[in-house]
Image 1 (cartoon, rainbow, N blue to C red):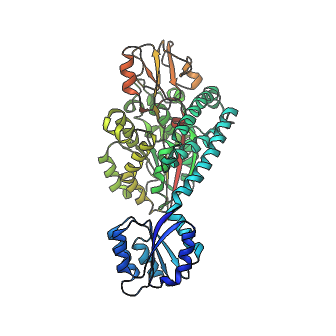
Image 2: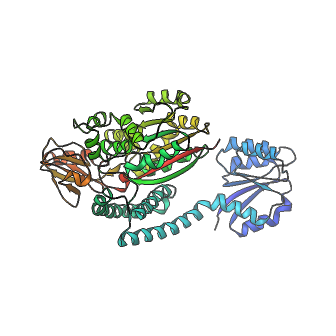
Image 3: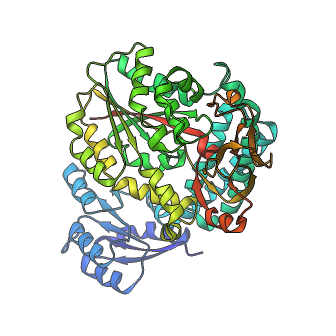
Length: 520
């Protein structure tokens, strides 16, 4: 079987015949050239999968040949072979975009390894990916039947989203359908698990995960007590998988540590983000700080206008005293972001800077409203790709890189909730004046299928604000979204395949808290 075609360029090629025969026996087709000029002519006329290039040749040298090869075909992998161990030459070769570097005398197995890496690497990788995927698939399926606990749910969710990312690189394996089925099953079991356990979590401090109310206490306050200046970023509506595709851009600049927490319910900004800033559940905020909680509606501009004040109250209760005033910033459009990036160094001496970043939430909502964005990001994998593209070109990334120059600074990044791609409608009956959110509602006479939603008659059971004697809450499970019977088909189609938040799913509830420590 022909495993690939390569060209070996060396002015002493006759001395390498045993190596070439060895490669032929292993299934590789090898052409040879004794000088750069002949090699360039052969590359122009033939398709090669790999070039082995001697660095020291009479006539046109290896580096000059390399430069001209890249002009003909910039994507072809080139492995430089040389006797010269000088660091300057290595750097020059790497700067000229060689794919690998071998020192003479080369052994047959060294050449074989290079050929396997560049000519068979993807197939070999795919074989191991399939094997590892099957192992994890069986493990997750078994754990779902046995009933995971909260820490095991984090492990399961991280395995699932890592496979979502991994399988993007191997579409030829055609494993995505089985992963989608497994994710649906996990979502269903997770919703049942939350329905059974959530009420005990919020009324106890034992045998439960870290919740929204404890994020600042566990991540920000310890750093302040150690004497660091802290930038605390909340990226609204950031899923765990979105963070995983974003963090690669930060690895060259930071040591990255992270842990996981669970969002409170509903997984919506007015509840979950206020819980983070205040260290309290919504009913507690309403009870102790009524002036900082309003019932006007549940949009961000009303319920989240006192985030700075809530954070100040939390620091006061925990006896954390800042050297200067708390700085609170909300980035709501690209202009704000550019300003923030340009002025970031003026904030570096502040003891605590809290920054709310709305861009990911805007991407989620924009995709829901835009047919073009749905075309660009038709599924989870493409949605992650869109996230990565935004972050890699964002003013936020530039600001974080700037902060990496300050050793006395620590950066904490988290989110208030994630989002789930809603694919199934859940018919809801009740007062049409109920909250219009698609994943949770409160109002009078609300009814929905108990398989699709949790019904909350007594708000205090979930530490939610009481809104009147006849007011109840419903929270959607899995990937369901609420639709009223009137014009049911119209709204079912309108909101299908949109990213929403407020309900119960791993994507909305299991979230990262990241600490960035500058490397420089």
